[in-house]
Image (tube, rainbow, N blue to C red):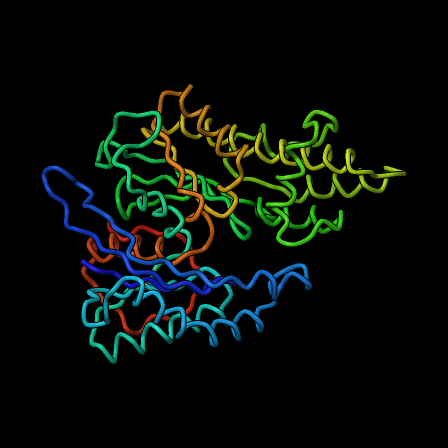
Length: 358
C-alpha cells in the first residue's frame, strides 16, 4: 500500500510517499519503506521575527506545496495512479497553514479519486517511531508487535509537551500535558532572552555541552506533584531573573546558564515519564517530537528506561521534526483501523488526541 503524506501544520512544507506491505506471520506490523520524504523549511524566513509568523507560513506553503509534491513523487518513482491513500495533517497547528495542506490534499483526492484521511499531528509524532527500518526496539527483545503495548509516549515539541498512554494502535489516553509553555517553546524563549538566535533548541543544547549543569540551581516546576502535568513558564522566568542579576555575561556564563536550564527541563521530563511508566505498568516508552532531537534527553530517557526494564524507542533524527512521512505512517494505521475516507476534512487548530477505535 502506498500512502501520500502531506504536512503543513506550522513552518515546514512536507510531502512523503511510504510503501507499507500488509502484516504477515513474520512481520505483524508490516514492512515500511520510505520512498520519499521532502521537507521545505521556512526557518530562515521566520528567524528575523524570533518565531513563526502565521501569514508568512501560509504564503510559503502555498508557494512550495506543488514543487515539493512533484519532487516527492519523482523521488518515489511513482505517480498519483499508484497512490492508495492520502493522509494530511488536520491539526493541531496554525489554522491558516493547516488549510493550505488540507485544500491541496482534498483537490488531489477529488481529481484522482483517492481515499483521504485527516491525521492528528501529535499522533504523527508518535508514529515517527514506526518509520525505522529496524525490527527491534532498543533495550528489548520485543518485536514491533502487540508485545510492545501498552506504550507511554512522551511527545515534546515547540508547541506541545504531553504524556500519552497507548493501549494499542488507535487507542490513546492523555495523562499529562503542559499547563503553559511547551518544552520547545521554553528553549526558544530562553534563547531569545540571551540573543542566541532562533530556533532556540539546537543553539541552547549546543552551548549546554560546554557548560556546567550544576552551576545555577534553577527550579524543577511541578516535579513533585502527583499528577503528570508540566509547567515551564516558571523556569523560563527564573532564567530571566538570573540574567538580570548577572552583571556580566561571558561565553562561559552563557554556557553554564544553557546547561543548567537544559538539565532542569530534562529532569522534569524524564522523572515524570519514568514515574508514569511505573504507575501504569507500561511495556515500552516512546519519545517523539522536535525536542526529541536533544542528545541529552535521548541519552537520559534511554538509560532510565533500561534501568526500569522497559523497551525504549526514539525516532531517527531526521524524523524528529515536522515531516510528512510520520503523517503518512499514522494515516496508514488510522485508515487500517477505521476504513473511512473523509473528503470533508477541516482544519482543527486545537485538535486533541483521541482514540480512533474503542
